[in-house]
Image 1: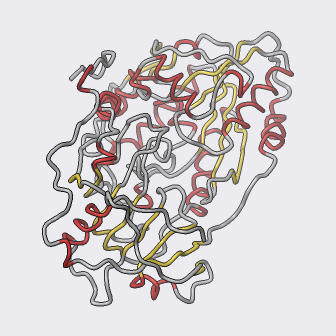
Image 2 (image 1 turned 90 degrees about the vertical axis):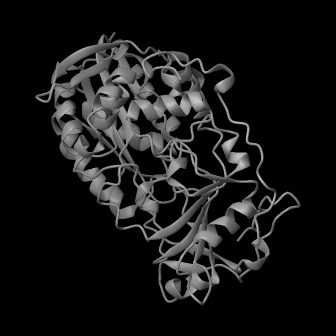
Length: 447
């Protein structure tokens, strides 16, 4: 396996070939599957429709800046953020209208196999291209050293961004999947880890997530003091994956403003309303869904086992059916599941996954859980291994992913939890699971 600081060249060890899995599990016939009902969960629906207009309006706070002839770097990350293309396009347009020469820099630590071309490819899969945003993308893994924290950790910045005349830090602000603090995942993390590239991301993660609540703000202070940060542009998504807030923040207010937006993000985020779950079926995971593949704020399973994720219901078993296409083979987060499918396992790109895991020093998320031949077998194995299942039947919840939680399916045993709530609607009668001849789950009918 390549050292994490080297370019990955895994050759024929890039992906898995899964063999010798029995097509069915022993005595699976004695496990009866419950009926499942479609449920719509209702979350706060704060939403911005005119994304480009609001972005431009926010940026007008910095109209006094003299940007004529200035080369301005705008950050673009690796997450699948709804509206990010529009936000970047509006930012680029606003900068051009003031005479600046904007360009995008990938700010994603070690993602894209920690290569310049790989990071451009990640952006392309997210729809972020020169044609879509109106500015060239300049990608490099070269960094400059900004300073050193009291604990000896060095802080790095993307060389192209540092040598520009100004940096616009653009990112979504949301709860982190591994730690809790006043500042979690957002603009400061985008600077310290995203613009830190592979070298900076490695330096931060070597301290462990249990130190992130202190290290991220401290390193962010070095960034704000030493790098040419023009301003930050933070956004918050609602539980429906729509942009709920866009806020431009001056360097002086960037940390305070991010902390306020994080509190707001936590208030409106999606969650599973069922009080306890025996088996959670997750149709897909990926880096475009969450930095952890699956959001620990939804599942309660954090890679480091740190406190602060008690808002999620207790879940006995998790089944992951597949990887998203945009995750490009990264299976980070799969190790927090209990079962997966052959289909999912054979899509894993080990080089991409291991590079990310070694950079983050998070080895649990890249592990491979028990592999079943099919969706049906994975579900039966999960049920067979669950403990203390109620006499009323197993409590099963099926979600598309941990980001899209509006329309879900729940077993009949969960309905008593949800009845009488004004933030839940039962959308139809209970129906049996459907599988094809190979054991793959057939799509549920539209609600």
